[in-house]
Image 1: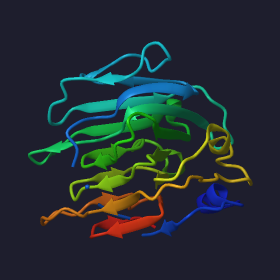
Image 2 (image 1 turned 90 degrees about the horizontal axis):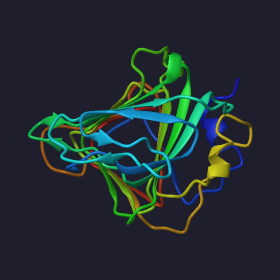
Image 3 (image 1 turned 30 degrees about the vertical axis):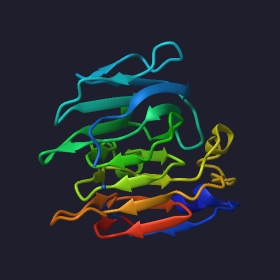
Image 4 (image 1 turned 90 degrees about the vertical axis):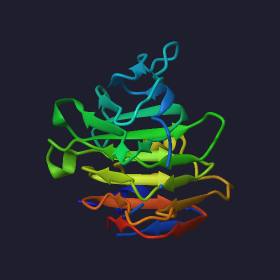
Length: 234
């Protein structure tokens, strides 16, 4: 049985790759204007409207501290289980006054799943200051593998919590739909792009430190990586 790392990167050429034990970024919102490009995803939450389909994107409005979105990955028969791709106008998770907004992904029936979250909007950097979680109720190998792709860069604040996942991938290089379809196969996932945006972890001042995927495989893919602190997964 191949490892998650080898299934991701077999035959891959990338500008820079950091494989690290796990860790830390601030945003005022939740992921917004998301359209499901592949697979089936059902979203729920007090601030969330829309179905994510082409004519009815997921939209967050009036987000307050502690707002929660839950996305359930339904159909899809990828090699790594249920899978989906969502193209977002922006993908941020905020934290206000010590209270994190929360985004949770689960697989239908507690099955294994993977989701590619790709920012295709104005390409502002992604900031994760709140909580991103997989399916805590599922077995360790079925909690989900989450990709966050933003070629403008990704920052994790010191309040960030990324947890309850089988794997977490953050990249400022691109991944095509076709390459993502190779996740879970011998071909692996190929990252491409000529961008220079960085991934930063725990760069903000303060006594708190980010916790990023301490219980799962963590992959940070970028031309440059700046880690100011935090607890990073292996």
